[in-house]
Image (cartoon, rainbow, N blue to C red; front, top):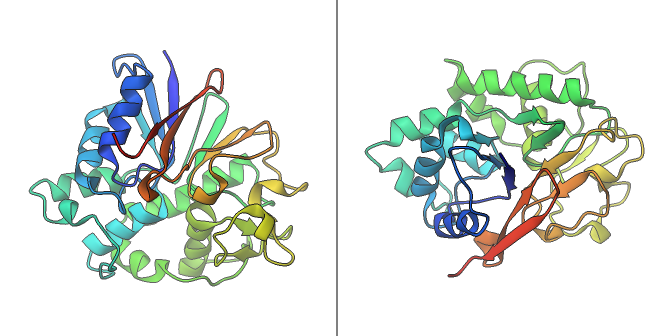
Length: 268
C-alpha cells in the first residue's frame, strides 16, 4: 500500500488522472490524500468530485477555501464570482450528491503520523488543538445552520486567533487559519492579503511554518494553497504541494513513505 498526497487539483481532472497513471495508483490498495481546493479555476470540477467520491475510503481529502465557496454558493449564501468555474457542478443532475459528499469532508486529517490541512496552522496550535478547531468548523458545515455559517464565513476579521473567541467569529478565524493563511505573526495574528512568496512577507510576519515557537514543529504537515511557493519549503517536516496546476503549471503528488515527488504538466 502507498499513500500519495496530491496538491490543489482545482478542477484539473485530466492532469490528475495522468499523474495517478504515472505513479501506477491502485485504488484497491493505495490511498489518495487531497490537500483541498478540489474545485474551481480549472475546467472539470464535476469530474474531479465524481472521481474522488467514487474512490470511497481510498480518498482522504480536506476542505479548501474554494471548496467552501462552492458549498456557500450551492446553499445560496453567496453569489458566484466572475472567475468561478464550478457551474458544471451546480448544474449537474448529481449536484446534491456531490455537494453532500464535499460537505462531509473534514478541514484537517491526521494519520500515519502526518497532518494534512489546506493552508496552515498558527503558532499556538498543537496537533490536538488543530484537530479540535477543524472539527468545530466541520460540524458547522454539516449542521442545519450551515447557511448562517456560510453567510458569515467571508471576511478577514478577527485578525488573530484567540481561545476566548466564540460563536461565528471563532468559526470564521479558524476557517481562515485552516484554509487561507500564508503569513502570520508569532502571536497568531493573520495577514490574509499577501499571496506572494516568503521573501515578500509583510512587516512583522513570517510564513506560518517558519515560526520557531510553532507548536506543531514535531508533526509532519502536508499542505497546499500557496502556489507561489511552487512546492519549495526548506524544512524537513513541512511539505508544500500546490504547484499551480490551475494556473498552467504542474500538479504534484508526494508518496508519504519516502517523500518522493511526482509531477505532470497542466497540458497533455
